[in-house]
Image (cartoon, helix red, strand yellow):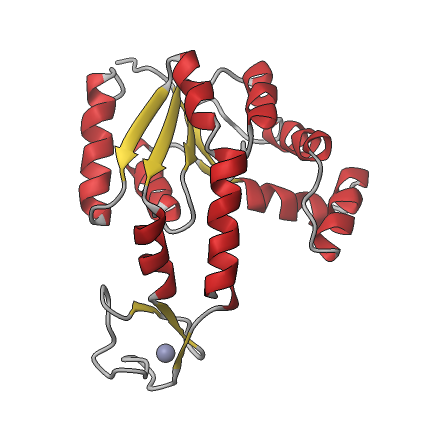
Length: 218
Ligand SMILES: [Zn+2]
């Protein structure tokens, strides 16, 4: 039995549940989930010349230029077995990078998890994490039965630095400005699949799988 090989890029704003969907899809279709962040960390750990350059940007907390990002991705993807297909998360972040990726590999499915800023804010601002065991909660969606304390270890729940309102607002604005143009890029390529992400994780997942089946990916 042969099936269309899945070469997926997954994108959406922070809070849209990309990580969760990526994992579920990787399991469902038995293909590797490749996180761009991990590729960068590996390049740094390996101590290559590229890794050294990336580290400079990371250490200064600034965004690496497209040329460098593309070079790392190209280098790392060569070292991964992509024969079964893959899901790429965290790259491309902009149209320049998407064009580079198209020259490396033909992406046949661009999954866009669409979510309003209001819902993304609600989800991100409500997130809480146990300072001790790192268990995750949400003030309304997954509340701890012990209120402000972890249900597992009683340690106080905290909000991660990433989840401060100012940081979230900045990241969402960056997403709209830099990454959202991927929607029209992949629409023109005929590979865009938009999913309404303002449902539960399992509803989103079923919606993706159902719509993929209609496109011949099953
Ligand atoms: Zn805990």
